[in-house]
Length: 573
Image (cartoon, rainbow, N blue to C red; front, top):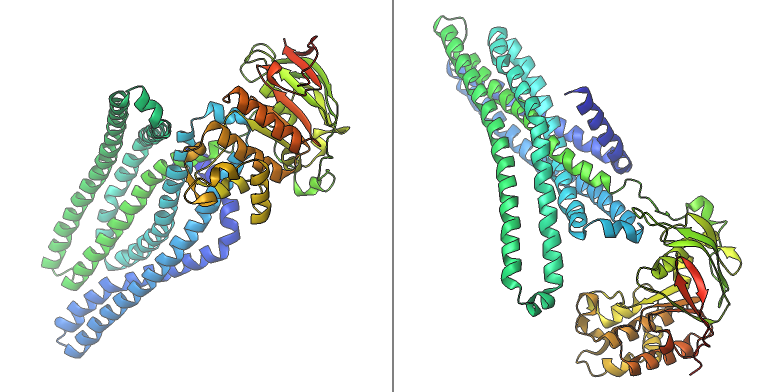
């Protein structure tokens, strides 16, 4: 392996070490058991030699019986220990790799929204599912295979040297050529494997998008169009897969051919020595058995090298998910959380001071030296053109990203002085499309407040008017809904979101275009609910229709990155 390859292997090993270290004792026990099994396997060919030379040719039937019984006993013991070791190792490797998947998943859930706008969900799912599974398959099969093959190679090699140094030298002749063949194949193997994994991610993304929008596909009569797109994607995937598989097969076939040539040479020279009386039949039989095992072990080790190249691609793709993300504001460390405030006061004043922000890749700032003070307990309306930065302002408030300059304070304290989880629980946002999940209505009501009692959930549902439409459903609150609330109207989804907010008892409530999908009557009804049940909150209403917002204390407009007062009097209806 080249120095660059050794560096990559070392980097991968160091990266995986924190996941392995807590289970190191169990891993060493498994490897110790594997070593014992490998040593047991080396005894059988030598027993065959004794059977031929001492039992058959020596005409000792009693010894023949004992040696045959020993072969059966060792095989049975090896099978039992092998089954136990396989179970222990699969369980151990599964726990290590699932820990890896869980850690990365938790990390992804804490990344800023900009990360998910730049990455396809299908690719992320493929990395978490397919790539982690590839790493697990490699680790499950490889470490035990490596230990077994290495021990067998060393043990059988020593026995072969003792049996016939000349035949051992001939048997080792193909090894350098086989290693050179694998080394030559490494770059191509990595390239073809990455192409297959990336195409798999493209197919996953396509399926998620089209199946999740099946109604829109049907409405556009685009079923045949999308089916053809899938055929094209599958065709590309198959071409890449065939390229990878044929290349892998070619490397394996070349190594196998070299092994067969070496085997033929061993039989020719060994057979000649037997005919000349320089070697016993039993020794030749034992040597060829050991040679077969040595060849298999050597091929296994060399195939593991190619398998590592495939797994290295998956390791790289998974590691990329943990690379630093611009604008990522990680949560506080346990050491620093004690110094942070664990709650946000009710109806706090909010102060945006000298705030500037430029999105990644943008040439001009969205927010520019913005100043805005929102009185505690007030209801403020914020409007502006699409793309003016209204939602960005709310993301900054909730620390999904950080400003270039300036700061934000709540109740006189910087948002950075609050525990991140406490800040986001205290600042609740109702959006155009509430985040609902596949599951029961009761599950969606409780989402984010999992410790809430059924009584508290049902009370919040009654206050938000959810019970009015749930009573008409055959299974009531146990009714299952689809992803994103499929099966419910826009107004019903908003009422569930309001009930969820009631459970959260926020200090700040933000409506981010929450009424854009509602008619005038539904908008009025929603604001009645908001003003009745969240009067103790500081409320911000982001809308393109500020005149439809009743009982607003103040109306402002976001223009050219700054807050501009609207001259007209706010609505008091």
